[in-house]
Image 1 (tube, rainbow, N blue to C red):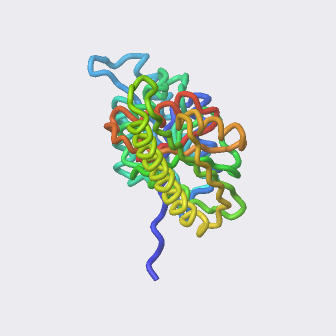
Image 2: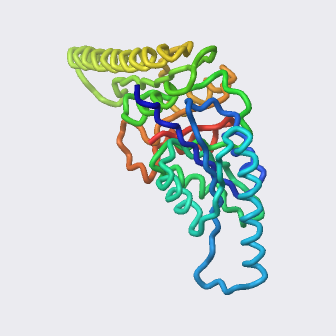
Amino acid sequence: MAARKRFRVLVATDGSRVARAAVTTAVRFPWPAPSDAHGVVARYVRPDYRRSILLAALDRTSEVVAARTTRVLAARWPDAQAVVVNGAPADAIVREAARVGADVIVIGWRGQGPLRRLLAGSVSRGVVRRAPCAVLVTRRALTTLDRVVVGVDGSSQARAAVDFVARLPGRGRRVTLLTAVEKMALPSQVHLTSAMQATARSEIDRINRGRQARARTELDRARTALARRGWKVELVVASRAPLRELLRRVGRSRADLLVVGARGATGLDRLLLGSVASGALDRSPIPVVVVP
């Protein structure tokens, strides 16, 4: 039997508090087995920099952060190595992810470390936009994973989000699959005869039933994939705005992780991110995985 492909984790750090939380999250997260890890410290050196005491200090700080990250990762992955790469932070991190063939990038949100805030929110968002793989964004260390909420909307990215969770060991863990079906209504401003209103309502009812049926089919497909991996699955069909419902469910279920697709069924250009993914990064109180 062929050996299973190793799941590759890339951890981006700048030494800040939230970046250290990202490293801790990477070490404690239940990744698929077998797995390995790499660390990356993105050092931005402007072209007009001259050799100076400041630049020398930046060099030393980068190396110290990389060495510290290597030691932390080695507690789980003895062969782990963190490297320093030069370039604009988001671009450098994405290039390193491609180089090592990462399945996921783990990154902090709004870092304020000694490396000139290299993992600020804008950098994390830039990584999410450009990454060739899933990105786990965290403001605090994730030490346990018992409950997960996943947004499902019928898009290929949402299916990829379900697939990401299905790869994780699910025994003893719970996942909520949530889809939001906004119901079409007859505009009150439209003046129609009684017969025309009845026809319009009948057509709208047919459309709404079709939307509900498609949503249920999508949820059932996702439930089957996750149940095979031992997850205990809850299905939720909501009728309000998707982001609002996801965040509400995160709070109600005391979830540890929120997983969403990079963009939704509307097909918005991923460089803009979908509104749900972007809103989750801004507003989620728990770590978020965004899957392309």
